[in-house]
Image (cartoon, rainbow over all chains, first blue to last red; front, side, top):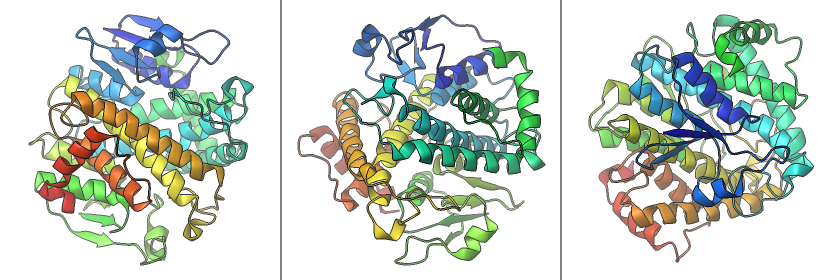
Length: 210
Length: 210
């Protein structure tokens, strides 16, 4: 198997952190074109999913979407569980992971991809045809990112980790979102003291360097 | 337990179809305000998730996000599997379900919520603060919906169901997306003959009436 990824992007990092937490090592190939925001033409020509991370299995099956790749590995290597160990945990972790993706990572991406000249006509990742940037989404992305921080800060007031007592994939997606937001000059507001406490804790785990 | 839902909306329907396929019956409460696009104020005041479907367990735990709710039930009632029975199936189904949600359902919603007077200042579901409509997203939503149809039609050229040989949650999200698109006057183009064949098949299942 092989994991296609791109060192600079937040979505491949979700999978790298997951694999580091599990202690799983697999071959990887970086298919980003440095300093361009592009993926290599030969990767795009061969893979209709057109996004990284993408896991190619030995039989040629390709699995895209960061959390779908993690879920493949979770079924193969259930311990330690990062997606819950009983039905309630499984549901709650999936909920918070999706909130982090839809309300967090998508919001930062909305700000990022609509504001950079690099992504003119590629305002959403993975599409072959042109999708124009929409200037109004720059501000909406920032507004939504700040609302996401408020929501996560409230959740972390009562919980050690994003989805409860244990570190999970919900923390992985939230961490990649927060660090991507910092890169986009959308830092966590000083008032979000619970996020600050949590961010220090999860950033100190060896997996955060992945 | 109780499932909060809203009869007219596509996301609660994903859970209803899933439960019908599994033969699971649970108490439900419709918290939509008829003819308004609003959820009832008492539901919004009590549930910070502010979206349906929302599953409330007997201990008060709430699980939101349609697929997180389905995954909770999948852990309790694994047969028949609707999210895969081995690691490869689990990964591939999760991938296609997420493609259907991000590239399909979100695209139709983008067209829908930015074009209706009902949703002025509520252009995205679930936010307490105002989010203005963005007219450019009406056309982008339509463009993305048509690109989603092309992608799913190509996938269904080689597969009986969206994620392979078996009916799965990827079919449920795609069906709810197609029917929501039809409601939004974004029908499947005549050239997408594979989607037409698949849509007849999955719409004939008793669960499609849910």
